[in-house]
Figure (cartoon, helix red, strand yellow):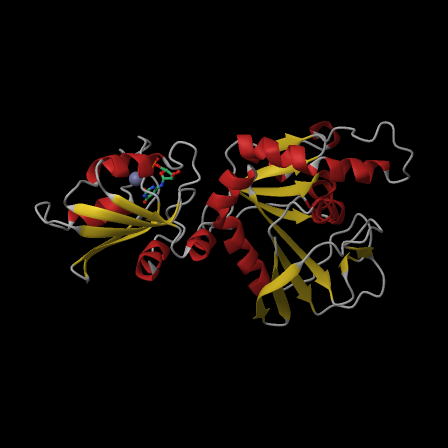
Length: 338
Ligand code: AOF
Ligand code: ZN
């Protein structure tokens, strides 16, 4: 399975939003064939691996990182190609969480006399397809929060002004990250203040822009309007509340319905880029998977803090995933330990 995972990884980002899948065929203890899903819409991993073996052979074992598909999508069902006695056993990393498949193939294969085993190196297999699994299992996109602060924790020098904090190397890493995400979300105020481009700057796919807030409150000359953004006007969920932070609480209560809407739009991954209120709302909701915190070598002394609501967030169990230097900036990637 370890070798099948290495195969799967070769599919890189060309397969998105499909999962990366790798296959290995073993006969009499020896690897006789390998394959991986190479590009979106193209043949699945099993097709490449099975294509290279003699169909008169017997008792081979197919190792595949994901349950073979049993439906017709852009390609036909892979289960049709897995026949007995050529293949007598299929070992899978994980079931396919896609409801069109999800366990169906096990029944089909078992019905043909093929033995199946599920859950080998499952954690690792899910890790290489975390967008795909989160989307189907949690019915929401995989959420990555990205922000940049000064060394003393500010996101800008003053309200309504955008301030340069990180250098071009950091920015390039953000553009690469954007290219790997289906959607990018910012609050209305960020659009108004920064007039951002929100693209991958030629480094890959451009994510679909999602704006939290009312379209009517924005000037239609802003760059995002030429990019068919999705607007999400948040619902007033605090009508009966006497809280002083009415608008902010309303924002926080809207994260779950917003993510549900994006799930129904088929968005597997979402990059949340700001500003402070939007990021705080996501952090408070706990509905996120990674934080990419960039810190630049600036000390403002005063300014706009990242966290806008005085609520404690010590319920979040964050674990360092990586630490990278970009010239004079650093990026810490944290993951939420579920
Ligand atoms: C496999 N092997 O290599 C992949 C699978 O539109 P299609 O035909 O490409 O189908 C996409 C779905 O097939 C995808 O959502 C996932 O459920 C499954 N992907 N299955 O057996 C593969 N890439
Ligand atoms: Zn398939």
